[in-house]
Length: 454
Image (cartoon, rainbow, N blue to C red):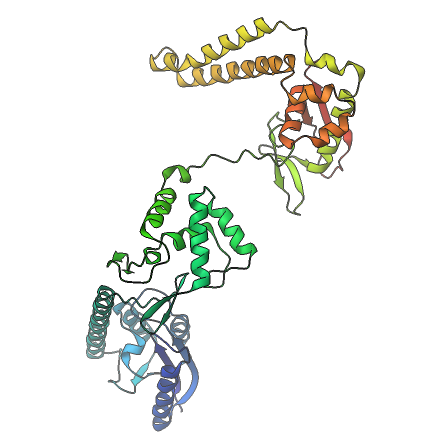
């Protein structure tokens, strides 16, 4: 009965990408099968795959599964080191051999019989030798790379932005060098890396991999020691000698700015995009509702506790129309509370602020616990907000005053920034979205407005 044979071929590094070494292995393995009268039923190829690291070899994994399933009687390889260089892989083969009758034949080394103690010993010795050779090869390669770096030559695998190589000669790419110099000037002028990345993308400038720019990619291009002519390999700086794009002073100044810890803890953006996000409250639990995209992509206001949501544009339209109508009434100026006692309000605000600030001392002295301090701080903070809101309204210092005295309220609201419109709404009313049941379409009466001022 003809034995069913599988061929496994592997090449660690395919520099040309043509798989020529694997093809030669396959040809010689097929000749071996033909001489022995074996039928080759499956071929497994792992091209450009190392057997010494821990990255999985897809075809090797598939081969082991087929061997365990008993689909092959003979395993053919060009050499045992094509099959395994780590003893862990040999253990996998031994486990298969213990379950199935398996013959391992090679073109350039000894055949293996893993069903016997002597065969396993020979296989183990061959694996140890292969592992030793692999480690020696890696050590020689590292030493060669270090020697080249010390002489000013680094043969990179990924081309750094701004440079190209002709053999061992490193040259500057003028167009990319101009982009690096421009980006450095922008950093010194206070621009962010994100804005530089957006500008590069908008002009169609890509990374050396042809991909869009990210903050990390821009930072890497500007802080690469190579841009000042230094030779770096595996994180070790071997000094100058290469072509430079930036002068040392500029490079150091840019690096100091980008390493500034304050950049990593930049304050949050003050730009307000959504009118009522965090301002409108949920009618179920009085929690703030926040602008968030729905599964369909439509923006909604959603409560993070009960997950009730309503269409953002629908709610904004209702609230703006009601607020505009209220401020268009003849008594709108009365909302400014110009008859309030400003001195009393200011005294109240000072007292509340001092009481709030004094809570830290009470906590430090052990007179109040953390929970009590937190509760009192929230209460005093809310009262202080009310007092300051009343002072602002009385002194016509808020956007509400500007809208209330305008002849065309709707037009004035439309001209204001989103932040100022939010201030008008917050000073004027408390907005809640009432529950309406799952699947019920939105209607204006689901928006409840509680006026803060009579």
